[in-house]
Image 1 (tube, rainbow, N blue to C red):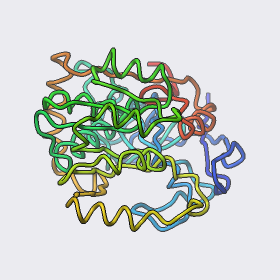
Image 2: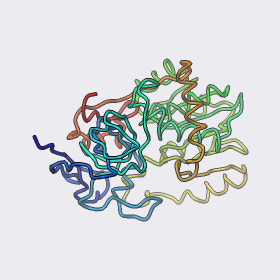
Image 3: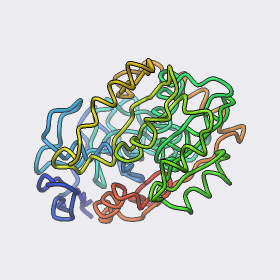
Length: 341
C-alpha cells in the first residue's frame, strides 16, 4: 500500500492570535529514500512558543515559514527505510522535520537517540531544547548563588519548571509565577518551589513582593507584560535577567496602550546595574550541548529533577493545541503523539 504523508502547512499569516484557518492539512504520497537518504516516521512532535514568531514574516533571528510550507518543529522519529550508511531501520532520531507524518532526510541535523537511557520523547523537553534553554540561560546568564532569590515566569512550562528546579539545586530561594492555582500547587508541592503566585491575581505585585522579602536577584523572563511590571521594582542591585521569551506579547499587533514605560526600565537597568540579556540557545550555546546533556542526564537519573509532559494524540490536533499553548492551556511540556511507539 502507498504510504500517505499528512502535512500541516502554513496557509496564512496570523493577524494577532493564530486561528485554525491559518493552518492547512494536506496529504501526499510518501516518496522512497534515494541514495544517502533516510525515510523517517514521526512519533512525537514538539510544540513550542517560538513557532508563533516563525508564522510571521517580520525580521527575526530565524527565517519565517513560507506560505504553503510545512510548519517548523522538532520531532522524534524512527527510521523506517535507510539508504544512508550512518542510519539503520529502527533507529530513533531527533530532527527538525516539522508537522508531518513522514520526512526524508540526508542525515544532516539528525541526532541518534538511545531509548534505554530515557523515554525518547524526553529529547523534545528536559533533555532537549527547553531543558538546554533553562540550563544555559539560568547558569550562564543568571549565575545564581546560594541564598539568592530566583523568580521564574511560566513556572510549570517546559523551560520554567527546569529553571526553578535547577535554581533549587544551586541553593536558591525559588519563586514561580504561573497561570492557575493548580499549576502553583504543582510548583510548590511537586517541584519544590518556595512559593508560586497565580498571575491572574488582582494583587500580583503585592503577592510577589511578599514572596520576595529580600528582593529578586535573578528573574528568568518567559512572559513579559504585567508579570515583568510586577518584577521590575523588586530587582536588586546587580540582578540578572535572562531574557528567554515574551509570550504575553507574541500575538500583539501594536505596542500596548498607556504611558511609555521604557524610561523606567532603562533607569532601573542603569541605576541598579542590572544585566538583562537575550539569547538564542543553539546559536549562542550549541558548542556547550554536551556539557548540558551530561549534567542534566545525571540529575535526571539521580531523581533530582521532575518532568511533566502534556501529551495530545493526533497530528490533526496540532493547530488547536498550539493555539492553546499560546493561551496557557497546556500543563507541562506540550508534545503531540503523532504515532504510537
